[in-house]
Image 1 (cartoon, rainbow, N blue to C red):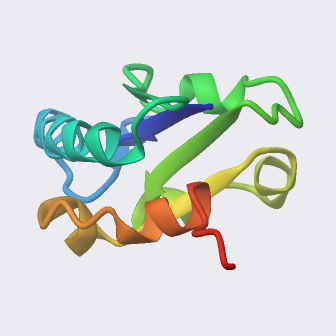
Image 2 (image 1 turned 180 degrees about the horizontal axis):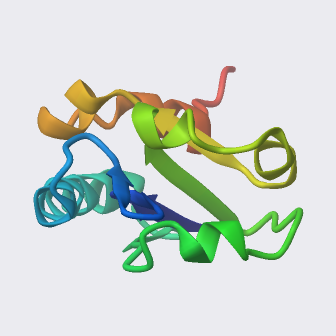
Length: 114
């Protein structure tokens, strides 16, 4: 599965993400990506979206091989049509800053129960 981290979404002249600075958002998500890839392991490819949300807005509908991870602020800007057609995880800003991957791990890699 491909996991795409979206640091920011550009809405005209406004950037929506954990901070108002796209470079800072990129750096935060880059650190987060390293930890997430290490914990997800084989079978997952973690990438940072460089398109400021453009790739998500134009992604193939119902793609079962991709999961998009966005900050809460960016998630709130999405339309119901986009939310309905893509696998999207909203990530609290604090989780990105603290590199807390548990929320994403629990949704992508559920633990097997005996």
